[in-house]
Figure 1 (tube, one colour):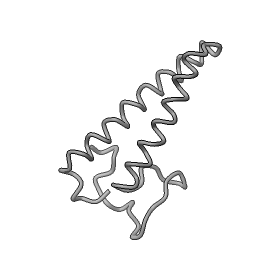
Figure 2: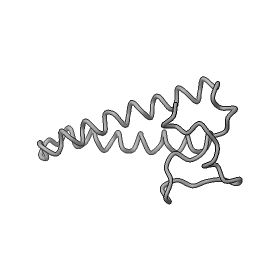
Figure 3: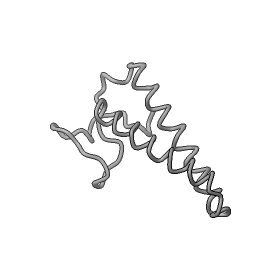
Figure 4: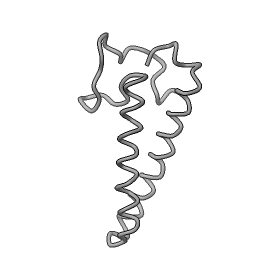
Length: 89
């Protein structure tokens, strides 16, 4: 993430959307651990997984990688040394 994105309102909105979807995915994951036969919850989980993938792809295309160790592509130049990182916001 480039330092010039820190004041960008669209950056913060997209990051907040990602955080909201991640929160719901964690909660649904915990719920499904104890209710594995709830098809409605499983369907909602899978829809949110797809939505999260799309949001993450949009974020990475605009602002750089979200995850390391081969889970996200990085453009040239190497972007992991750009701060602040998403978890520091």
